[in-house]
Picture 1: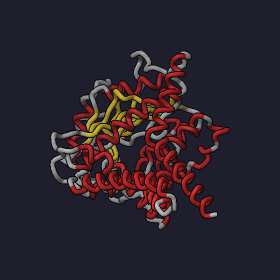
Picture 2 (picture 1 turned 135 degrees about the horizontal axis):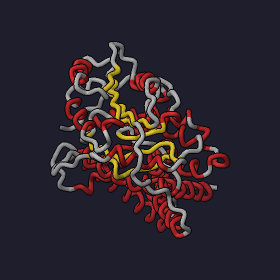
Picture 3 (picture 1 turned 30 degrees about the horizontal axis):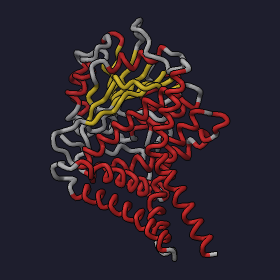
Picture 4 (picture 1 turned 180 degrees about the vertical axis):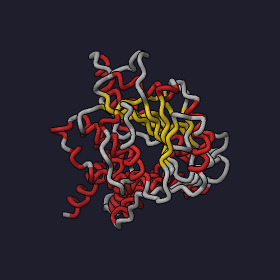
Length: 405
C-alpha cells in the first residue's frame, strides 16, 4: 500500500514536470515542428500585401497623466511614413490632472487631424476606449501607449497585413530598451519579451496570435465590441474575441513599440500582478474558447500558450517541491539518491533566482541568474494575481507602473 502511494506520487511529480516543460519549452518546439510541416505543404501564413491604396486609419493613444511623454509621442506619430491625410490622431486623456489636455489643445491649432477626448471624471481606460470607438469611422483603428516609441514604418506595416480578408487584427512587437547595465527587472523583462516574440511568430505561422500587445495593435474597426469597463486586459479581450469570431490575429514583428523596462522589481511586480489578475478574469470570460471541437487551432494555441502559463504551471511549481520532499522519505536508498538529486537541482535553481533578486538593483554582470529570477518572479506574480482575483480586488481605473528613464 505504501509502495503504491509512493508510485502515485512519482507519477504525479513527472506529470507536473511534463506540464511545466511543455508550457515553457515544449509548446515552442511542437509549434516549430508544425509550422515546418505546414511550410513544406505550401500552407504558410499570409505574407504582407503589396503597397497600394492606403485606407484611412485612426491612431488611438490612451494617455492618463502622461504629460511628460506627450511631446515626444506626438512627434513620433507625426513622423510616421503613413500619409498624414490618411491618418487621424485621437488622444484619450480623460481624468488627467497633469495638464495633458491643455497641452494637446495648444497643439491642435496646427494639427487638423488631432482629436482630443478629455473630461474631468476618471472613468478608467476601458470606459474611455469604448467612448472613443463610438467616434471612429475609419476602417482601421490602431492602439498604442503614450510611453512607447514606434518605428517610423509601424503604421504602414500594420495596415498591410489587413490585405488578407481573414485577418481581423494585427499586433506589433513589444521591445524593451536595453542599457549596458540593467536591473533584474529590465534584464528579465527583455529576455521574456524576446522569447514571447519568437513564440508569436510561430503562433502566427501556425494559425493566429493569442492575445495582442497593448503597446501596439490594430483592428478592423467594424469588429470592435464594447468591453466590460472593469476589464484589466483590454488588448487581450479585444483580440481574442475577434479571433473567436473566426478571424486571425496576425503578427507584424517589423512594426514595433519600444519602451523602457520597469523602474524596479517592485514596479514590475505591480504591473505583473495586475496582468495576472486580468488573465484570470479573461479566462473566465473567454471560457468558450476552450471548446476545441468548435474553435480547433485557436483552442489548442490558447490553452498551450496562455491557459497553461496563467492557470496551471504556477501552481505546479510549489507542488513539485512538495512531492519531491515526500519522495525523499521513500525507504529505498538507491531511489532516494535519485530524488535527492532532483531536489538539489530545484534548490540550486531557486538559489539562483534568489541571487538574481539580490542583484536586481546592481550592475548585471551575471545574467544567468536573471533567467531563473524572472521565471520565479513571473510565476509568483501569477499566484498573487490569483489571490487578488479571488478577493475581487479588480478595478478598471488606470494604474501606472513607473518606468526606467
